[in-house]
Length: 176
Ligand SMILES: [Zn+2]
Image 1: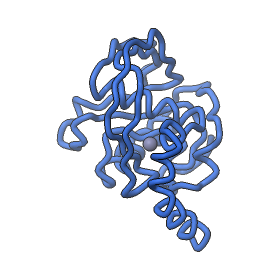
Image 2: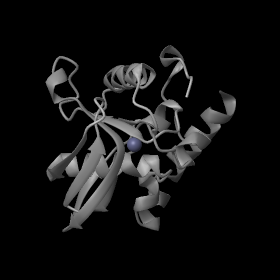
Image 3: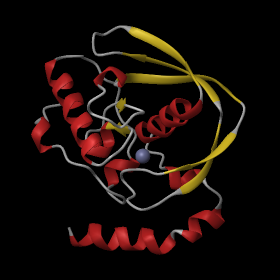
Image 4: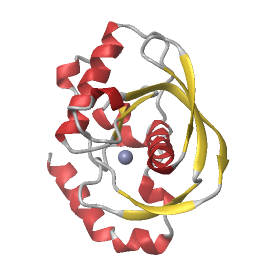
């Protein structure tokens, strides 16, 4: 992947990159570290707590999280490369948003507890038993790597309730 980090920008629905299954990362190098740094910048700029590479137009299996959403707390930054989710348990419904869908909020049901395994920027494999917002966030972001959007995770009735907003986004994308 040769995309210059500075050319990365937030991609909004219905950009087709958001519906594409992302490829495995094969090398953890300085280019990847630069893209990850840029992803955190874009995430903070748009006041998010998680961002997946397809959301900045890069179809690779990487996402970043900082549940505080605060760039002054870099110790809370997490990077997940080639992540996998195991042992989903329970279920809970919470309201979610997505930086690729400005002004859309939806109640989404997801497993309450998951184990997430991934590689970090040093190339080491790690795993976290996640609950609460971390569990929800990593599931939302991992969906992005599979080209699955949160609007596809809600009942038809909820989808209908945001139809006009989606049409606005489609129109804006067509004009961009
Ligand atoms: Zn999202």
